[in-house]
Image (cartoon, rainbow, N blue to C red):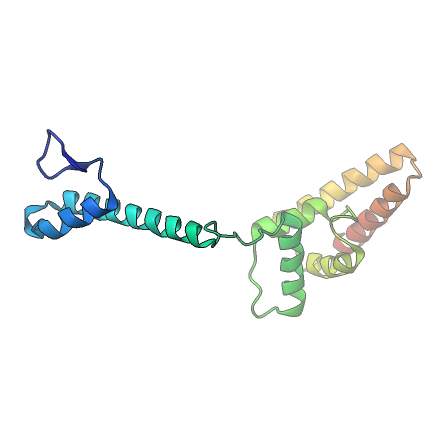
Length: 170
């Protein structure tokens, strides 16, 4: 069933898919303004999709689309690093990936040893402010670790990585 709106004689409300189709076929396209035509087409499309979903549900076919798994920041950054080392001609600089690597390079869980060696090679090409900031942060972390005298194995590994970075960049 369909109703006419008081503002325009062609505006349609409360319409089922069948009624929209019937109205569309009955109506001369020349009588509709572009806005009315666009609204009618949108409603037709929406109703068609509802009908398709209903038929799919009745047939037992799942209607929800499975979205591809989104990679985490660490996975993206490590893939970026691997791309840099194995496929340099197709590699493209990405500031966000570099920033993630520079922030997490001392964490063995986030950047495993096999990637850390690649990261050290990557850091050799580091330039400008990124290089200066990395050196400053490494020096500050080293002072902080030297002052703590903690013999925690993770801190020892972290300090070793910091030493390697300082040795490379200084």
